Structure formats: structure tokens, C-alpha cells
Image 1: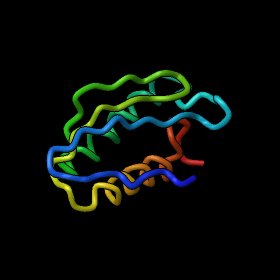
Image 2: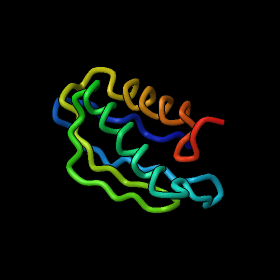
Image 3: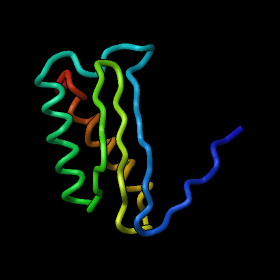
Length: 94
């Protein structure tokens, strides 16, 4: 069964999370954590997202984020994920 569509509106707050494949580590060292936070900061600057809370663990992360605009937040999230994936995650480019 497909996931229900995300309801989007100005000021919406979302719990976003991602895990490593098959429980693999997402962050292998402190540089990986720093790279993720830097990339997240850039995404927030570009999109206007507000991070209210976050947890970074070795094999996954959680974000509590607010989107100031309703339009295209899904596209912005996809773009943010794509840029993180493009840089190779915490392991660097491959």
C-alpha cells in the first residue's frame, strides 16, 4: 500500500529520518557528522527550513524540521537528499 500524501502548509513541522542500508553505518567518523551538519545548514539556508531538534546516530538520523512555505517542500526535500547522496554521504565521494 502506498504511503499517504504529505499534507503541506506554511509552518508545517515534520519528523524526517533516514537509515543506512541494511543497518550499515551512515557516519563512520566525526568528519562524516560535520559534513552532514554543514550540508544540512546549506539546505536550510537555501530552503528556509528551521531545525527544531536533531539526533545523529552512527547508522541513522532524525530531524524535527519546519518548512516556512507550503509549495514544493517535497521537491526541496528530494533535492536536499540528492545533494547529500551526491557527495557520497559521510564517506565522501566515490
